Image 1 (cartoon, rainbow, N blue to C red):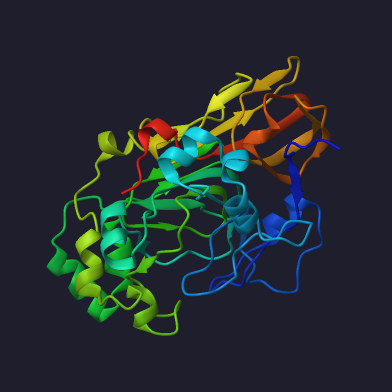
Image 2: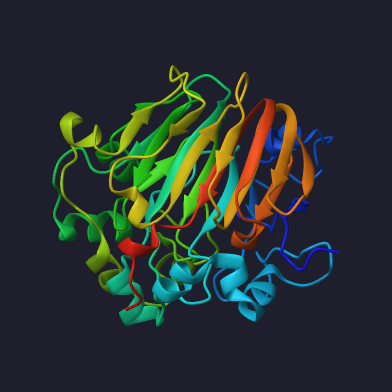
Length: 348
């Protein structure tokens, strides 16, 4: 047997959530729809727990070991020396399949500096959405305030739980498969009903939820014990007009290249995502920790150490850096998610 680490196919990992969804995930994975409608998130290759919980959210490898523990035991093999130098033994990445069976509440996430100060974490929660499917009458997303608002106004909306004002103040953008939206830390946002995304995030579960009523059991779950006045310190209340939105929204559906960089400029300091479509060619992939989500078709992944892995629609893989140079071929479409460029990150 090879002494090298090799790619591992992962089962579904759907910790319970407060909102509805999950049928689109079941359809992608070729499973019958679950009786539970509250499995809208599949945490893929996760070394991150749900906020305040010990193991919920973590990926368990087929061997029975938590991925988090396997990485901690052998970080250079899993992540590569440059990554470990910059980010330690954290994967630096959380990938989710997210199927919004109802509109999500208006919320935002902390910056690295805020998370360091209040949660003793090296990571805040910048994220990005790759829309892979939509359904229903009016699938849309809500990134950023249309016009600058004061923190006092936001605090009042939050006290009153004035959901119409919160949502109405946000940009409202119809989306279709192939659209991507980069969500910097602090940017208020929501995802509308009928939007199915592959979501990349920094590896935390820090969600500060302004619109908690009808979603969360108590306001404390919205501000994570900080109080809303403190939480709002990390909220971006500036206006995002059409020109500014163009810096975070991309439309990639028409791109025909075999490798398409999916996310906005600058996001590679937090994570990277490409759409791979080998078709008539064979794609070579540099060594990297990666999460693969097979969206369409079938093919094969071959590692430089002789490993060969069939890829089919709905399968998810975690790939260690130690797998080395790999090639992918076949008639298929893969979303490849990777951690940040190590040179663009330093541990605080």
